[in-house]
Amino acid sequence: MSHFKRPASRLRRPFLLGLTGSIGMGKSTAATMFEREGIPVFDADAEVHRLQGPGGALVAAIESRFPGTTGPGGVDRQKLGARVLGNTHELAALEAIVHPAVGRAQKRFLARHRARDLVVLDVPLLFEKGGWRRVGAIAVVSAPLWMQTKRVLRRPGMTRAKLKAIRRLQVPDRVKRARADFVIETGRPKSETHRQIRAIASCFRAR
Image (cartoon, rainbow, N blue to C red):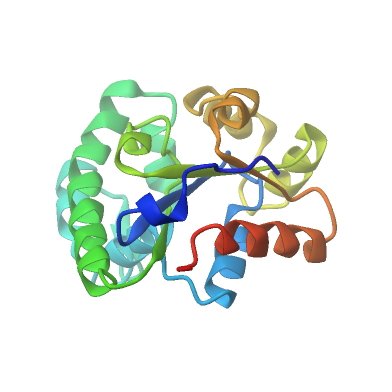
């Protein structure tokens, strides 16, 4: 784990720690561990699921732009993924619907936790979509390539071809690691990952 060296006395409140990592690297596990340390976490993926779930605020807009991709359970992620994965134009159209709504939810989250010393913004595409510019430090979750592949291929409906297409859309793990203030290794026992996260949290607690 690398270390962030900015003096705590200079940290604005709340300090925004961006948490990111490529698919299958263990980001959700890391986010849960931050929450166990009492740190508020904004989970961008969870917000997308809520907005696209049953009765979600974006279901109608997505159905209008991508007919046949929604139903009683909200957005059918398999059908929608088939429409946008590998199609730059369609993916951009989806992002134009989803990203502003997630951004508004993030602003509400930050307003609720404005008195905290630290909050974590769990954003899968932090580097890819420019979110890194809006955080004070970045923690990248990383694991060996073989482990990432094994984890992802366990997911329902996932294939090696889909994984390859997803990887093409993501900044390579080695680049993320190089740009990170902290690297959280998840290819180790969970107790070791949790130890790393406790160490990161301690860097930002008020002194």
